[in-house]
Length: 256
Image (cartoon, rainbow, N blue to C red; front, side, top):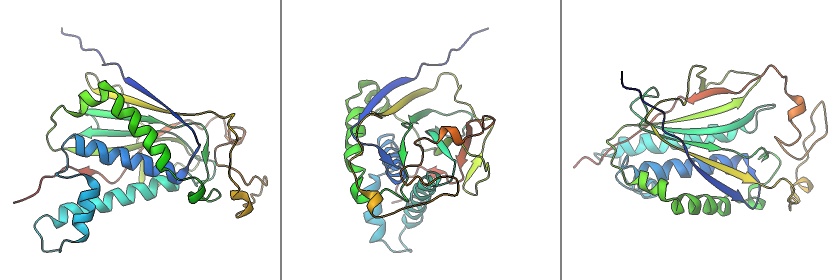
C-alpha cells in the first residue's frame, strides 16, 4: 500500500515593532485573505478594485451579485473577528485561512499565529495604534518568502475560502463562528504555511489611551489590555477549540 506523508508547514516569522489591537488583528487577517484570494485567482480583480467597482455598479449589472456577496462576506468576517477580542475571557490563539472545495480536503491553508498580547480595542484607540505599519511588515515578510510566492503562482480553479478561529472561550457559543471540535489540520499532501506574529513583551507601550477611556471590571480595575495578565483567570479545564466562520468566500469570474 502506498503511504502518503503530510507535507511540512513552511514557517514565516514576523517581528512586529508594536502590539496589535483586536481591531488591527481583524484588519490584518482580512488583508491577507484578500491578497491570497487575488493571487490564487479566486477573484478577477484585487479586492480593493472590486470594492470600488461594486460601489459604482448597479444591481442590474451582470456581476453585481457576485461582488456584493464578496463585499458583504469580507465585512462580516472582519467585524466578527474584531468582536472575538472584546469577549471577556476569550483568548484567540490562531486564525486559519483554508482554500478548497471543502474543509476536509483543502488545497492550501495558512495558519496565522497571533502574539500572546492583544490590546483591547475598547480601551486602546485605533488612531494611536494604526495597523498599517504592522500590515506593511507582515506583507513584506510574505512577499520576501520564496516558498510563499512560489505557492501563489500555482494555478487553482475557482473554489471556496474558509476562515477558522482557534480560541479559548468559556461561553463556547457563537452565532457567527460555529464550533468545529473535529476540525484538524492534519490533512496529508496539502501545501501549508504558518505565519507567526511576534512582539517583544519587554517593549514599553507608548500610548496614553488610558487617559481617554477607563474600564472597570467587577474583579479588577485593569484598564490596560485584553490578553495581558489574563492567564490566571482561565479555568484549567478550558481548552483551545476550533470555530468556523459561517460565511464562506466563494471564488468567481466576471460574466461577459
